[in-house]
Image 1 (cartoon, helix red, strand yellow):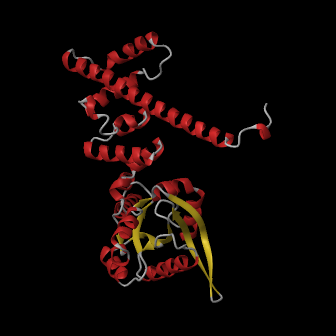
Image 2: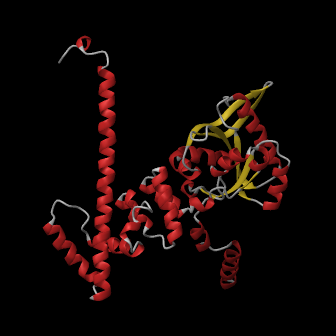
Image 3: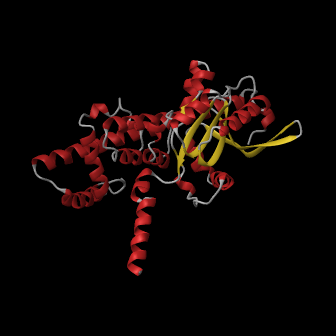
Length: 342
């Protein structure tokens, strides 16, 4: 190997330049190969869809077809009966092949495409496809965001951003919020307090960041600030790396109370003064509560001098909540059991 001292002065720069070109080309090749695969699957699905309409092909034919295709193309993966069904669904969802590109379908891996095929509403499906491509969502992130209706909840909760921030800053700050936040991954018991929630959220920080949205980085928990000899502790502190702003998160186990806005505003002011740099956007606060009255929240936010928002959180997905018996149902059941025993 040639001694480093004998190499040209621009050798390292040249290696980095060539490496960057190789990496970029590999990415483009992979993206092109993925697009060709999606179009191939659409073509196969289109044939199957046509056969099912004209010749009455049903799903019982697909296992035999899958077996024959695997025999003819032994080095290719993806020719299972289940995949063939998804190919047929792909062609049904996008009847025109030329629509795959403009709608970014062929920019998604096949696993992502299979996931969005479960969305029946074309407009909703298109929104999540665009977001998955734009944000580079992994498949499990896409599944999570679909299950929790993440895009529908973004910017939905009450804030005073429009009153305290400039129009562009208010719009950006609103984009990092949603209502409700779905924290079902915490699996907390009903008796757990705010500190237990903090611990669970930090223990499951990946899921927490995923639910908060893209661009969040965890800074710390129970951040201590000394003010004239008095100690104050911020529950959770995050930094949004795209908007360059700190986000203070306070947790309340019970329903919303107006005094909580004052406490959160105080913490926002602390972080803004102690941590925020001149290049950072305004610090904002997010108060997570178990329940809230929109009218009470509106009045409380109208008097706050710090940009804060209030959102509720669900520890179970809505479909699970609907499946559970209500408190009144449980009382009736218990009363019936007691009557039977007597």
